[in-house]
Each structure stands twice: as C-alpha cells, then as structure tokens.
Length: 124
Image (cartoon, rainbow, N blue to C red; front, side, top):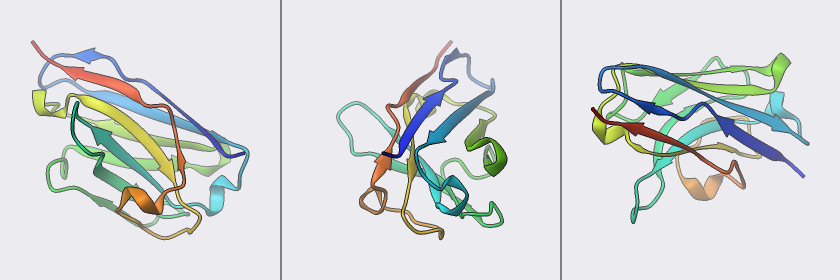
C-alpha cells in the first residue's frame, strides 16, 4: 500500500525555477531508493534523477545535470526536485518513483511504486 503523491508542477517561463515535492506513505521511505522520471506526450518515461536511501548518493540525466537537484527528507517522508534554469524542453509530466532496494536505479521497470504525476510547463 505504498502511495506517492507529487506536487509543485506549474507554468513557468524559461530560465525560471520550480521545486517539486513527493510525499510518501504506507512504506519504509527511509530505506527506499527514489527517483524522478518525466514523460513527454507520446514518449516513454525518461530518467531524470535518482537518490539512494540515505540521500548520500545521487545521479542525474545529462540533460538536467547542473540545473536540477534531487534531495530527500526522510523525517518528513518527502522527496524533492529543485529545478533551475528551466528550458522549454523540460516541459513534461514529472513522476516520482520508489524501488524496493535502497540503491540507485535508472530504469522505470525497477520502480514498482509511482505517483500520479505533476505537470511542468516551461514556455514564454
């Protein structure tokens, strides 16, 4: 009964910033590896960033490295994605995901738990 709920997606102009949040319930959040994926219309879900159980290890897709930061607050059961210097190509539905392992994972099939998604639109 693991449940994930994203929030924070909005319309934003190019160069702007947003912070997405994902609140987890129904599981042991502090032992789960987590990730953010995004999906463009008509495309497969694409890896954005991941984080291990403690937050001590992170990784990013090349397209967002240096602009996005993934973090977690285990005391609040919350995952974050800080997005800076946003570009129109960042426009997508963003999903948080949880794995059963605590390590970094990159493929959508490695994540059995998903949120409902939150829409980010970057346009002038």
